[in-house]
Image 1 (cartoon, helix red, strand yellow):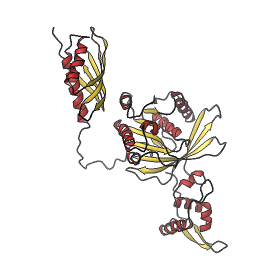
Image 2: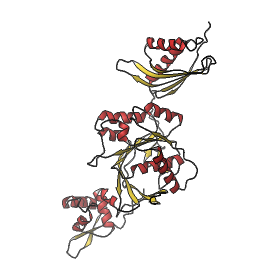
Image 3: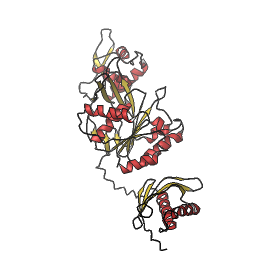
Image 4: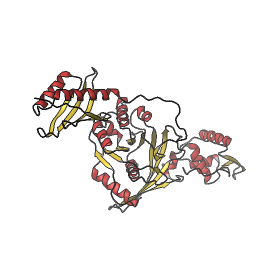
Length: 431
């Protein structure tokens, strides 16, 4: 019996490969590729046929790409379905082609030192998310981190610059480890209503039950098939799938995330001490990192959310927090969620999270003060003092030398030195 010659085409990449033998109407998908310590490479393979003698699904399962015995076993089972195809050659082509692509990895490129420096850092959402880089947003539960992630997803999906954020249009994938499609769908609808958006969004949603590392093939397949630009992970603790203090857990998470080659937002929590959960590798892997703080008053239908810039790569740290006021409109029948930008956190509970010198400057903007007066001003929301007198005097001394604060000629009624803001200083809160 004459067997047809199986020429083929290979496409895909990043661990997901598609092969097609057009002359004989055979297609294959190979993914979930793993290489063991003994260099044995295993993968999952799915073969389908559009041939009249064997139409539809042919076979699916694990194969050892490096094993001649495994190849022959698979070819033998396929011969039982269709004897007119040279299955030994098809499976040999499949295994060798995928092995070569998988082991080749990313191509080597030459750095010629001729980059165009007039082109700035590319941003997907400026100044929070750089193109194809990971942003980490962390904070205690209930601070509004998820609302922020959903708000940014809506803006990216719409390509809508808003609240001082410069946004590029993007296709978004929301990886949800914590709630349901119904809950996220309601939130997206509420945010869109507040922005006056009509029609349907194009945000893709995937519920997650295992770690990102274990589901990375499915996620990567979605990223490729839907042309995803931005992935939102909510939240990192579940996405890591292990003890956060374990260095390998954090490295595996960010390694999986990086393999997607897209921009990302990772929403994470703090421990009971208020510190980012996990090893230092989380901080090292993130390109932009923001700590999320909130100010919320009892019986108030809004919260103040502040993003404090803790790490930046290729850019300077933002001097002031990016603050948002999240208002919940409609009570029990919540219809929309208004998110508005605050350019000034002076006089709010978020101010206590600023650097000491900024807090001193803010207090002096309200009027001239002595050292004692400043000590009374610098307390946290519980009313406790947050700075010693010696620390305060040191900050004042350095600030007066740099011209940010002035010693006034007049003194208070008790004859104590008054401090103030130089008249030439401009308001630097807006970014």
